[in-house]
Image (tube, rainbow, N blue to C red; front, side, top):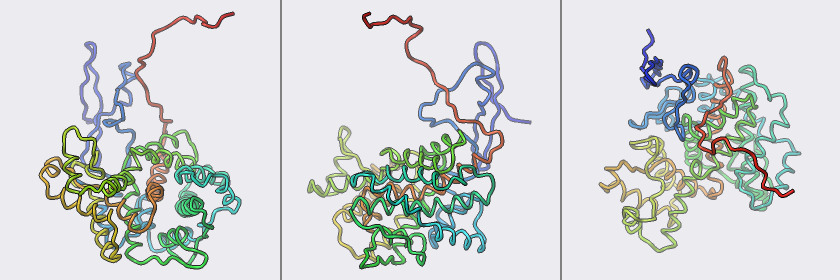
Length: 428
């Protein structure tokens, strides 16, 4: 028998079904609330509203748990392979050797974009934000691949996913080169996914960029740890746009636009801005922490705490370790990195932050890792988008394959003028 909760309104009683997920989380099913009672719920920001049922990612913020298709993200640390995790998210299980080889080969073969698309980059001003270019170009891909405007089976899904995941790094690298006035570097089929992206970013016609193993591991982990995060703003946007049966390219372009917002994808940029302020203001990390703790202070400690995680962000734990490996290998002096490491040391030994569970989060470490590798701050959110793309594809496909799926159409509570008669204010 289905378990229910009772709702009493105006002397009438209604039974609302309870739904339970595989990890024990419970929800009240209000899908027929308006039809039966004439009422809707009001939940600004959807913080208490489940918009769908999903089998892709599980988060328990209280316990610091993040799992992809049931696998704890910590288990990807020792052999980080973004391509393997992308397949896992999209198709529901880890790839067999044959599936992996086939998908990897497609990523290599489909890395180039149509040559006429390369001319489109000249239409953007050199100062154009890379995220604007990325969104526009992903949308434009649908013009060059009309065969994927509808995706009706797994073979088509695999083919379009390979094109998107491969071409997004090409578009991203070309956008970066355009902003620096540098010639385009085409994909190198001999290189693996991450190494090929960094080659397109940093190689010169006279000097090839060589990507060492630790750097590849660091970028692979960054992409993996950003690959999905349940119903966040950009993923929810992809699902909402996709609910209108918009094609995958357009839906993912909308996800890029949502991610571009500084409250979503810009947190690691804010971390670097904070470190720059400390450095340029000739402040010690101790002084900045003291100011941040003052009740009426305008200073904030960026990259600490998380809306979802009320414990240590599990992604930060993984990035902390790869950051140490990376800095040790580079043996590189950078005042901002020194400040970041000192802030981490102070906060992890300060009862003020420990009692409030304000631990370094994924954005704190991702920013300093990207800086150490040489990625400019205006490309940070682009890297985030490359990582998040498999999650967007997985959610679009999950929704697209849901029987009797409905177009998303939230309700509202109207607070404007009551009925008002029209009286023209224009003189005849």
